[in-house]
Length: 169
Image (cartoon, rainbow, N blue to C red; front, side, top):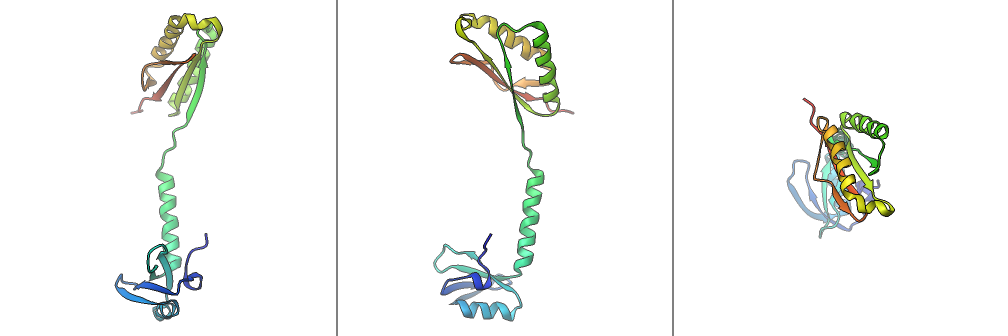
């Protein structure tokens, strides 16, 4: 990241702000650099897009350190919810159903969201009621671990629903 600091500032004239936040006025780049040198600090361009560009006299090393610290803190506090996908069939076997339930339970306990899809292929599209029953059984089995964000919805030949984990106490 090539910041506009000291000699990297290429503007002829800049508006200078002192180390205490006071406005020192518009001056040439060299005058501004000399002013920063008097305070034994750096000249940092905080707003290169404005007319004239705004530069502040500050300790640039400390500024960068605090900026990195804030970024690290923000990254630590953000929570990424992972979405896992699961596909059911309208004519699923009992054992396969139980396996899918076990897998979904594990994911919900780990705090992940699950997107459950049920694809109706070929003539199965005429048996939507059977598929809806399988999906409702699946949701009721997982009821203590998570709740659907909305009712299962048929879009084209795929019925899908998102399941969010319940908040653990």
